[in-house]
Length: 215
Ligand SMILES: [Fe+2]
Ligand SMILES: [Fe+2]
Image 1: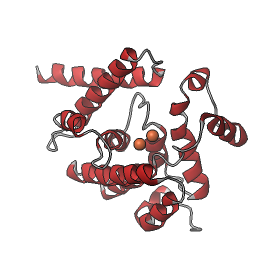
Image 2: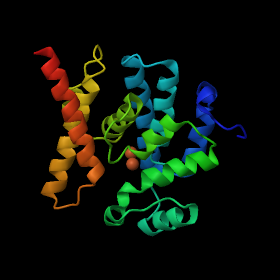
Image 3: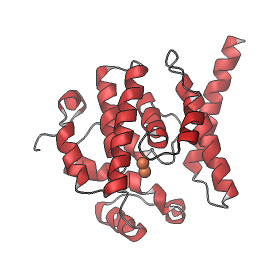
Image 4: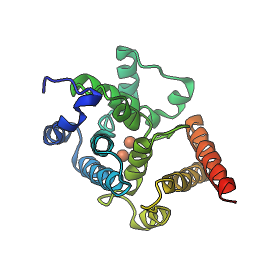
């Protein structure tokens, strides 16, 4: 692949090549999970009737979201140092939140993807953030509910929030996942990344606004 994938070229992106490329980087179950997230993200984007470009963005980011998943914490820090990616103190305490940033940088440099929405959907698939786009939300959700490796009972609870006739049900679905993630982290006495709290407060505010406009 030589051509750089700018937003205007997103429909020409070679998914078959990207799958082959990813299979060299991820082992069995991780690769199967990525294919599941790819299919689920494409399915959600299509069912919510996103634009053709956004459907393709969701499919690409779903496939590539865990590109850096097999790197150890020290390899992730090493990569960030080498390529000038910022690492905050909180990221040192939660190294699993670094693989999305390293992964986004890898696909930018190695697959020449410059599409900001694709890169952001990869960057925020673990913690979420305030003000997520629909593509970011879909990739975040697809990662948690893909059909190949995720717990079917949890998937069922999450998907109960989805209503394909109303794209705003993505906010309710995000809220459900963020709440259950935060509860899980509290139960396990683990650190909660501030971006996860911000993401949760943001969807909560969006949902409250929607409720008050209905009342
Ligand atoms: Fe991940
Ligand atoms: Fe994942």
